[in-house]
Length: 196
Figure 1 (tube, rainbow, N blue to C red):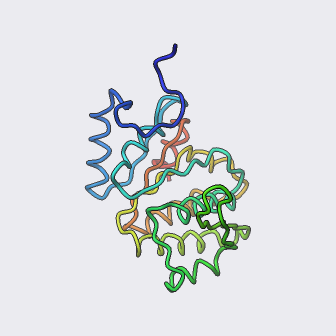
Figure 2 (cartoon, rainbow, N blue to C red):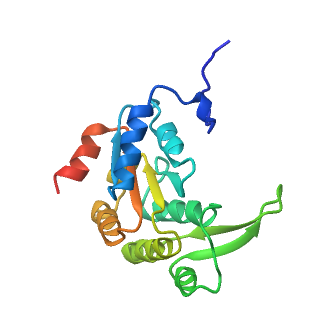
């Protein structure tokens, strides 16, 4: 029998041998720094991020399957707006602005009966504006929220030529949000954050 858990599990008792690294990441976040975490695939970066988020307000968004900027923005928005740590008030003017920036539909989970939100985004010319609206809403209602973008190097494969600049501007214009960028292609990740 294999003693290792190979699926996602938030049980802190199963998290081992990274307490020092976890403390370093938490120190950076508490000091207002954003994070970049990279290493080979299947080495536990996502598990480390999830463990870091225990007891904090934040999410991990996996960008690996996204093919373009619109899909990435939709995935980020869907994850945020359906997360229990994100308070959604339909009367809030920021929420109203989000309704205009995205194609939002409300639905009901057929198994649990819980209400949900599905977000679509298809106008790449408004990508910066849409992320800005999302960031402004999140920073206003959840200061200090931690947004972990996993497999972030995927954005280098998007057909849009300015994707890195859009994400960099988003990060820089929303200092109340902590960003953690994680990826498995270390040279791409390092280049993205050091060469421009």
